[in-house]
Length: 339
Image 1 (cartoon, rainbow, N blue to C red):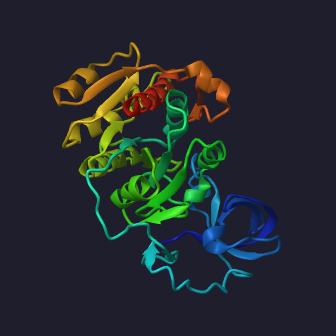
Image 2: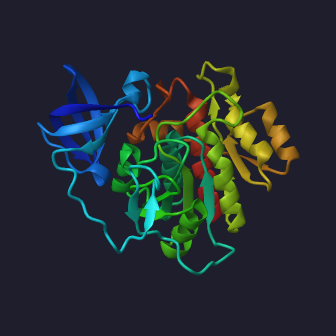
């Protein structure tokens, strides 16, 4: 069952995109909460709200806030937009209508490049390095499942859009709240290249990766679906490597098991960019399956000075250089593929 509690908004912060920070009081306890304005509207102090409290009660490090489920004071008057005829989060209490980007025509093979990445933390360094390697490239982001579903929650996307490092943001499948909505990941990639004129499509989850420690039960496995979608559409396809030297978990040391699993299960070869001089026994296995392991420059100092997000799982760039180096190598490789 949903873990719902009734409370009162005691402090309503300014919205960040369509995401609003709040403080609520529930049974005499002050708690942090967030509201997705696109779904439940703006909250004000004194509003009577129902919130989902599971994240705080579970002490989740990522997504650790109560989520407003409904604003009983001012959130019950919305009407249906009859021009939007597709549901997202359908058959849940949060189902809402969207206007999908998918058109009637299928144009393949696509003249574009796609990069599937397993963690939202890869998005900024990939986009930044690509801009350094090939200024003026039109780069779009297709958000998939595997992490947070709301598109508006990502401060990274907002900053990349403001800096001109992303030309657009489409939420695909169960994700929602991007600038454009797609029913499927293939539909989002197709629209990005054919409809929006993107040269490169970066495809991966929102913040807050899902994980169970198992081979297949984690958000990074969605990179397999993303890569297959791109390959099926005829895109030249890159897989961004998850690498680490600072993660204490052995399964993520070197080339993470997330990436190794995707490489093992892919039905067709992709390009795997890695930093210059990087070594890992898994590279040989990837080459044996036909994948191209491509060494590329990673400008760690330049990225560090850029002011873009430089932390992963609480670790700084200095504490886990391979994570950022692999993503930067991917951006450099993408720029070279377009030259």
